[in-house]
Structures are given as C-alpha cells and as structure tokens.
Image (cartoon, rainbow, N blue to C red; front, side):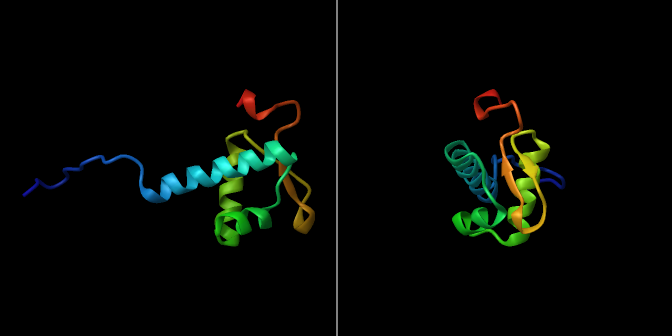
Length: 87
C-alpha cells in the first residue's frame, strides 16, 4: 500500500494529448487557410462551444493566434507580422 500523498507521474492525460492534437489541427488549418472560426473548431474536433472557445482563448494567450472582430463574424488568425514557424 502506498503512503499518503504519494503520487506516480504517468505523464499527460489522454484528454491533454487529445487537446494537443486538436491544437495541431487548428494551427494546420490556420496555416493553410489563414484563419479559423470557433464554429469550425467545434465541427472538426467535436468540442462543445465553450470548450472550443477556451481552447482558442488559450492559443491567443500563448501568442499563437489573435482574435479579429467579435460576435458571429469573429475569427482567429496568426498574430500580425508573425507566422506559425516563428512560434
């Protein structure tokens, strides 16, 4: 029996790995098409509206994407003057 507080680090969870794969697909699409909308992320990944929003917001916070516009017309693109290879 393990002692209290012991923890075995088994690496990233399946959910974390899946999100990394979704991020990679998002960035590949942005590189190919120059932009992506939240609804497209939902469709291609199966994520809920809120999950897609949080994932895109995280990519913005990491400096990998920038949000342009608001509401239904909003989309995400590489930050101005920066390509994905720079990230």
